[in-house]
Image (cartoon, rainbow, N blue to C red; front, side):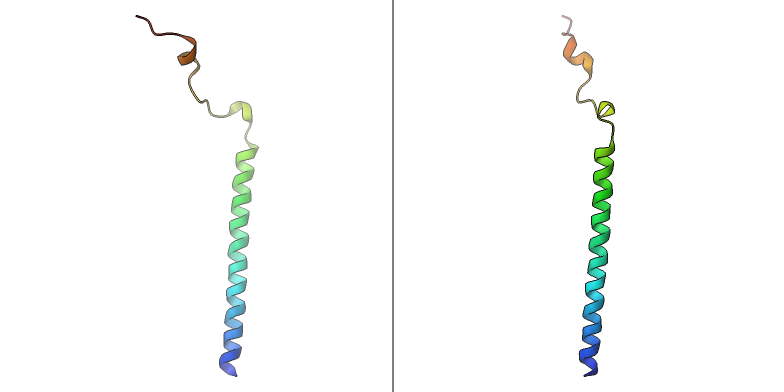
Length: 59
C-alpha cells in the first residue's frame, strides 16, 4: 500500500510540474507576442534603402 501512495504522490507532483512549465511557456509566448505587436508600425524595419529604387545607375 505504501508504494501505491508514493506512486500517487509522485504522479501528482509530475502533473503539477507539467502545469507549471506549460504556464511559464504560455506566459513567455504571450509576452513575446505583445512585444511584436506593440511596436510602432511607422518605425519598423525598412525592407530596402529608398535611394536604390529611385535612381538608376550612372553609365
